[in-house]
Amino acid sequence: MKTFISEVPQPKKQSIIQYFLVVIVIAYCLLCAVKGGDFDVFLDAAQKLASQQNIYQPPFIKGLQYYYSPLFALLLIPFSYLPFVVPEFAWLLLSSFLLYRIWKLTSQYFNLTVLSQKQFKWWGFLVFFLTIRFLLYNYSMIQMTIFLMWATLESLALVEKKHFIAGGLLLGFACTTKLLPILFLPYLLYRGYVKGFLSTVFFFGLFLFIPALFIGNQFNMFLLHEWWVIINPTNKDNSLEADLGTHGLVSLIPVYLTETHNKIDLKRNFIDLTPQQAFFITNLIRLVFVLGTLFFLRSVPFKRNTDKLQTIWECAYLFLITPLLFPHQQKYAFLYILPAIIYLLYYLLIVFKIKDNSRFSLLTAFSLNGLIFTPFISSDLLGRYAYDVLQHFRVLSISTIGLCLLLAVCSATKLQSKLAYTSST
Image 1 (cartoon, rainbow, N blue to C red):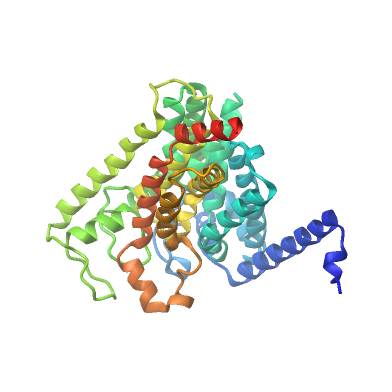
Image 2 (tube, rainbow, N blue to C red):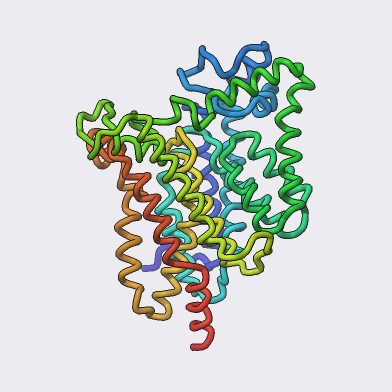
């Protein structure tokens, strides 16, 4: 006997599923907002700014340091007088829409006509499966990563369409809010978008000093100095991160080069260097990843790129290295792997479609490396101690470096040739 759902016409069935998913998302946003998260820290900073307090010094709500700009705190002042659950719920709803927009912006770089409907659904499902862990971190902690990624991708799309002012304004605001998107500034210049670059620099500087109109120039300059003190990469606190919970090169490299301690009593370092020597080597490795961008750009400076696959390939690398290069990165920042995951899964679908000889070796390497990104890696499933051991040895950072290597192997040039083969068969 047929069930009710099987008797529903296909378009209507899809609508029912979509409405159901929307309801689930809204309900989850409300649940996260009621519990509260890091957005409490942002709103608390806004309240402190309204009373002319130093937003970068204790006391902090929940004991968490505020790492964002004075402008961001200023913009939140009107919302800080509401019950925190209201702006946090609104922010999560906005983040949900921006997440959908990220998918649309990213997928437009690919030729979707070569994928069957089944392949397209598998593509979307596997992207979701490999990033849901980081999505949940961002929702439960009410974080900014989704906004920063969207703002970067949207601004790049605007600049490519020669909307330089709008693109520069958006990217400049994102950089002012938190410095993570700033890696895309030299990228714009290298790719010959000089107007987009200059527009971004202009708005970046403008947004730094706009708060002076409301809080006075002297107090704004004081806050900018205080902000720089805590985010300065050469700051002692940002040179070696031994505790659990932080990820990236600053938390990965030094702990294997010098003796450090946290609550997990397992030796990590295979050599005993001084912290200063370990930090020097870390900066050299940072430089290697920065210079690695040239491998992905594959052209002389100031030459615009007309190949969409090349664009998303090189941008995926920039997103990947962002949480690796910056200090004090938490798990939620590794949602920045999303463009690389989208690209690599598309690449795998194509190599399997044409039965390429490398398909099984690539799948094996991707699967083994990608295991750490799956929702199976959680304290609920592994147990708290086993999960903390993985954090202790910085497995997330290591797997992200693995994604960089896989991305380098699966170049846009190779993908173009494989797509050309699909067209000829």
